Amino acid sequence: MAKPVCREPPDGGWGWMVVLAGFMKICLTFGIVRSFGVFFVQFIEHFDKSSSQVSWIGSILLATQQFGCPLGSIFGAHYGARPVVMVGGVFACLGMLTASFGQSLLHLYLSAGFLTGFGWALAFSPTVSMIAKYFKKRRALATGLAFTGVGISSFFFPPLFQLLIDVYGWRGALQIVSAMMLNLCVSGALLRPITLFEDLPVASAGHPDDGEKNTKCWGKVVSTLDLTLFLHRGFMVYNLSATLLAMGFFVPYIHLLAHGKDLGLSDYEVAFLMSATAIADTVARLFSGWVADFRLIRKIHMVFLWSLFTGISLVIIPTGRSYTSTMGLCIFYGFCAGGLPALLFATITDIVGIGRILNATGLFMVFMSIGSLLGPPLSGFLRDRTGNFALSFMTASGFIFAGCAVHLFSPGFFVRKSVLPGEEMAGPAGRSRKELDEEGPVLEKEATISDADLGRRLSWTVAETLESNF
Figure: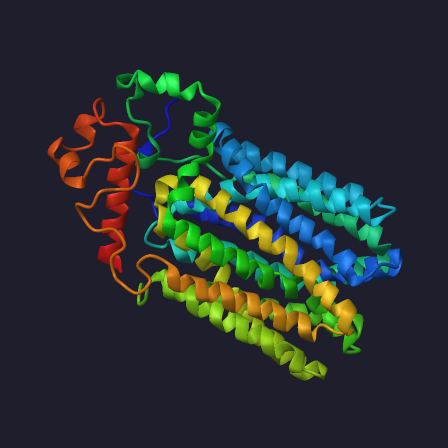
């Protein structure tokens, strides 16, 4: 039975169940990463290793998830989001389960790091891109609602994980976490497929040369991964900024609890530091998505402002010396950092268009993986050298400020229009907007307009929409 084709995202309906699936997915990935600092302390004591060595567990987990996201995009495009996300849940479960039997850090690198990270990679891109397909006017709010999973899970998970460790030990706690991972299969089952007009292929039978081109290996790679995105200046500037942001953004997720222990706080006090941070984080995610959909300012400018305040909040965290002052600073950090992730992913659609969101999300996560792989180990190394996390947090804020500054080089950051009507689009044999319009409406010319020209037409449509909105 053919699936119905929608001209516009429905902005509701089953889309809210897709948001629920995204919420569950975020809870079981980034929520666990942010709460994994409880296990970080246990691993240092059990394996008698340095902070930098143990930090590689979280770094490999994040980097594998992000670097593997293009695989999630490829498999999602070929087999659909639902089965891919469910298979990812099985891999994530197996990773945490085998980690519970680990006898060395290398074992944890391979299991909790690579295997679980691969499962998360399969689940991430299909879920986030599905939310973008179901929503247009309320896309930022929908993405923000899904990403509140980080804040809510971060409120409950640290005390829960500490309780599980106290009762069952860290091995038993990891086995329970592995069972929780199977709920990714439930979230995958909620991802009902939807087909938009932008997703439809355009009569390739009228272009016999296409078959010959697709037989070439490189042509298949470019087509599958949409590597032409690397020629998109705005997207590449955005990726560079994300790489620098990731080098600092994930440091508190892994080391904030260890920082609390260095201050002499009890196990449950440091666990509630993360819980309080999570409350502020959740409020910020809802607030930033709600404000973004009002379009008072452009999303790229909101990303710039939230990044700036996140860097400031990281600078002042080490100034807290007591439980009360540290709690207040962590709440401030949670609010500043919480509004950023949802905006980052909602803005990708504005940059590349809805038709390229699946591959763009995957490639975007690859660039973020570079920062998330290097940031936490560098933070742990600085802690080993200095004896505290003060310099680690300040260095992390420096990377965030650098990523914030890169946004200034984004096309159209200081001007209203990034693509002018009638301009030639980049690429070989590109035809102007005027030439395509003279051929008639898209629906009447499907047999004669090439995929590339349709892509250009859709890009202009997206650009005009952005110009009218912003």
